[in-house]
Length: 296
Length: 46
Image 1 (cartoon, helix red, strand yellow):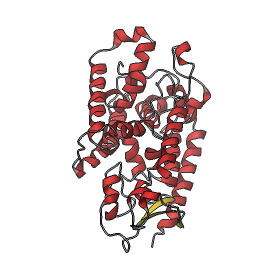
Image 2 (cartoon, each protein chain N blue to C red; image 1 turned 120 degrees about the vertical axis):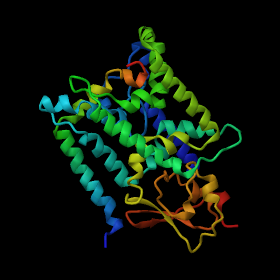
Image 3 (cartoon, rainbow over the protein chains, first blue to last red; image 1 turned 180 degrees about the vertical axis):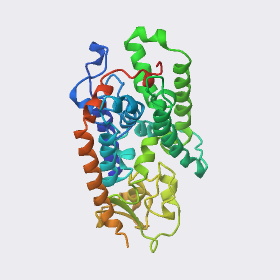
Image 4 (cartoon, rainbow over the protein chains, first blue to last red; image 1 turned 90 degrees about the vertical axis):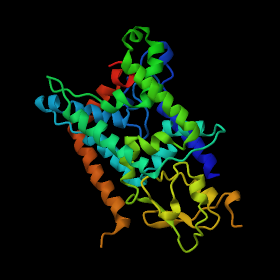
């Protein structure tokens, strides 16, 4: 039940984040007031259908323009975006990755393609913190041109979401942009293709190893108002939670690990021993389990 | 001992304050301005 509900929420979030249906006629991106609000998931704001701003792109832009902004007397340091991310993280931790992120949804759908599945080494989940520190914060802040302007390093050199949602559609909609596409564009297309292939074999490869937005939300998992609870007294270490987890989290080793995206699949479908539950504001929440997960 | 049950609400309050400061500093317009123009970096040509 919960699993079906999540699919509906993911679909609705993907459509709502990309609901500007007039782009085939305007051949341009949406430019309304909603674009001042950041969506909670990774969704490129240069996607012709995007209705909101990408929190990562917005944050990088503010960091990249921090010197000229200060010179002009505008002390923009990213508090608005950090506030939105912090409010979401404080409430639900990394839950947006599971429920409303369009790119996370895409990865889960592609992973359904029948194939031999591969597990990544555990240390790889820490790479995303390097991308956050380097490509989102330090490089946009430090590497600047003569006028003091930096660049959005993660968007420019890495983000496959931007390539998929903006790079390909915008070159179709605006033919004059095709003349400008060179090595940089090919690099981004190559990164996108690599991740699309990896998604078939590996559970959410981008979320687990690269996504700086997931890295930001992960800091809140241990302290958010919504939290998962592990009951070691009933846990039999069958590892079914790990086998079914879209993020490869070993829940039996402890609740609220940085990569737990609170999809609730382990609680609803995998665990047959009532060893997993969740709480809101410290209050335990009781839920009916899926038929497949009732006690043996 | 730090009460982890209250920490979420304290952080929520803190980030609400951060958000309000950001809004007062005019960052909403800065985000909008960037988001309504095609980001050439995102597209892969700039």
